[in-house]
Image (cartoon, rainbow, N blue to C red):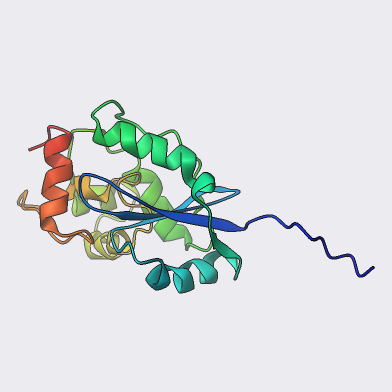
Length: 174
């Protein structure tokens, strides 16, 4: 034999999940939640996931069950904090530091790009923080919807300003 297994592990499994803000593409690896996207078309997401985890990306609803359960609880108003492992591999250290600080923004509260930049020790990096949040591959769980402009205005959001507003209303922040 050549040492190939007939059954091999899924590297990244994904499914499309229904939510009150529309369908969400959700992907998880053995390391944790790898992606949530407001663009629910799997074909659009597969290349991005393959760059992160390799070519073994398969439709596997069971692999995202923990994330689906916690997202359902969040949208039902029963969950204020996510308890999921996250797969952040392949991200630069600046991005990781922004996302880790973002994860500390409490449910129902907002912060600004500048405040987030200051908390990671880069007070002049508000635009760079904005770029990181624009590319956040795990929105909702890593709550970039809780970050607003310095004037308090709702600014850009991958899911659209209406979705950002809906999430903030769900959390009682608006």
